[in-house]
Image (tube, rainbow, N blue to C red; front, side):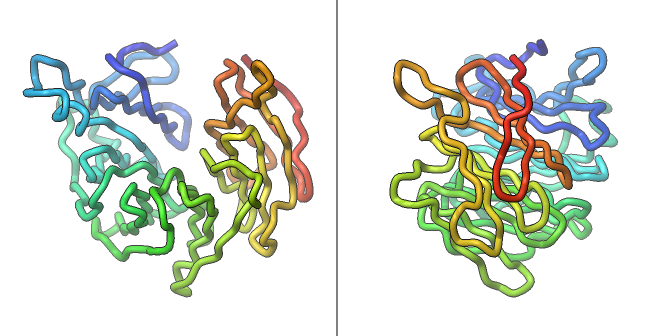
Length: 281
């Protein structure tokens, strides 16, 4: 158990080598953790009553999304202040608080989602303003904005191809063909709940977790899910538990999901179905 945030942690990211972990919180703080010994380094300090004029100011510093690049060079942090901050992981800990390399502005509402394209320095941010912004961290510049979602964006992911996948409160899943300047729209159906999380397993394959407890497997060539698990985390008082988060080990068949039941479930993913292989508490 790693403790340090004053308020609820809202996002976590692990470095590619698994040596460091990064966590963001509703108190505005970002910590870097040494996974082996649990020691933490403050990147952004928490905002407490002594340092803020009113509650609104504190809320504006909430951290909502964190992502790390595959080469362990950059950390991206997004939050309720509508900005994306880029830190150099190699220099973190040499000064406290850390100074970002650059701050990307442009979103008009909070940044809820961040993802790096696998094996690249292409970064995507999704916001409550319904837009996705693309950045090139090789040049530390903004590239373009992707439009299509009709409601706030909830989560994003991206595999090797330059085709990020996203979910939003408009109950759609979208695959963005960035090079072709177009995108595909997927809908689970009228009785499927709103998606809470998404994870790209490999190019063309992705999974979504929903507030009605369903876990859906998608293939880019199919408009409907090719695999469905109902009540993936069981029931509580006769009501299915929502699938709140999911994460896949890239280029593998391993998927992890979480809910409010206190368990993490590991799944073996196959082309036409999803099989539960183990459960950890």
